[in-house]
Length: 78
Ligand SMILES: [Zn+2]
Ligand SMILES: [Zn+2]
Image (cartoon, rainbow, N blue to C red):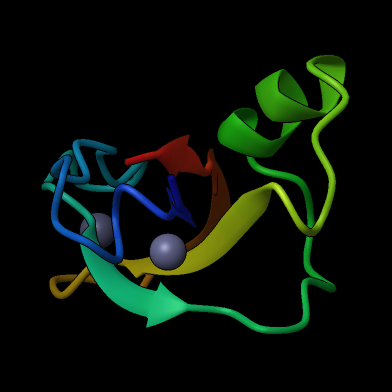
């Protein structure tokens, strides 16, 4: 049993959309130090008592307009 990030391990696909142009945001990879503003994902996960050791924060960006946002996913057990 091991806890892994579903995004890092390609278990799920990022489906967030750019709020500016509506295109699918691309996954820019995991972010080690989370310092940015909370994303909708982070707010949901915070309600579930998530912590740094149970979440993986990724930088999502829009390849079209350059918009970027951080989002956290709960680690899953495999
Ligand atoms: Zn990850
Ligand atoms: Zn965009």
